[in-house]
Length: 207
Image 1: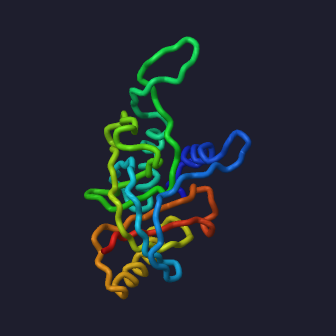
Image 2: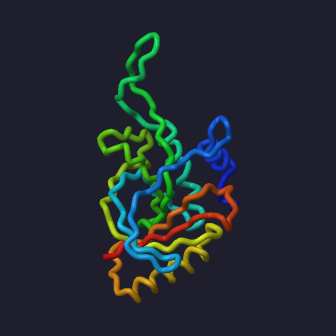
């Protein structure tokens, strides 16, 4: 896709590979499946913490624009007062901390644009996560929730998203569930992965 920069592709490749070139495991959002019907599932999600930023851009370009500040945050553009690991000599100072990548990268409508977020590793709490140095990046806790979710492959286009969103809404209506939140578009794969192998999901909070 032309809206994903070469820099994004390169940084994701570096992030997902070790020095030996092997893929690293990526922590994913924790959930349990309550019901399944083909590509649609009813899931209960555990609470989580996200780093998010709002961008004023169109649907297909929002993710690319938001990726840079979020990736910089998890790569060390943050502040912490933690003690530095013991070395020679022993010293103590404010330091940048590198945070592991998780999946998915989520995007949902926000006033004046789109809110794009990275889920933080479960080992962190609000009090232990380093503070972003970029004021456009904020940390927020997402309470546990139930969602209807549709899984699909394909390109990251508004048309592909809209078609599956309508299918998911029809299933929710048929099963007499109540929508109580905005749709969230979740992407699990880097942009260099072939479109037919990508894992995409749309989540709609329900009760």
